[in-house]
Amino acid sequence: MGASTGSFGSARAQCHLRQILVTLDMPTVNQPEVMIRNAAQHFGPDGRLTDEPTRQSIQTLLEALMQLARSNPV
Image 1: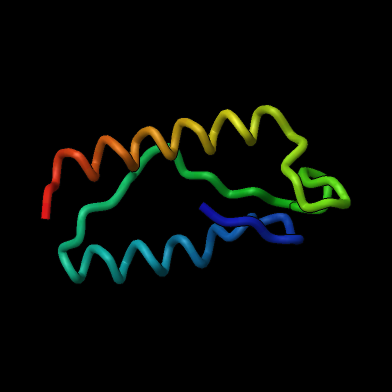
Image 2: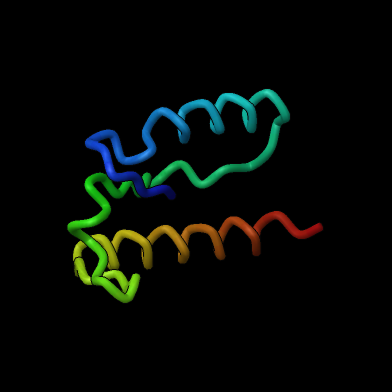
């Protein structure tokens, strides 16, 4: 998950991070990919997320992350 002020929404950074994690054979959450572009439009002046579709995507991502963590105990 990432946010940026530009139109790519951290896509490049996520792509490079994925390459590193695959090389290290680390488990990853593949879907959903959350890339918040033009972040200033999605957050209020207090820094709180105001965009409901983005909030739902983040919720789905966190649920997938919890499922991954539960299926790969240390």
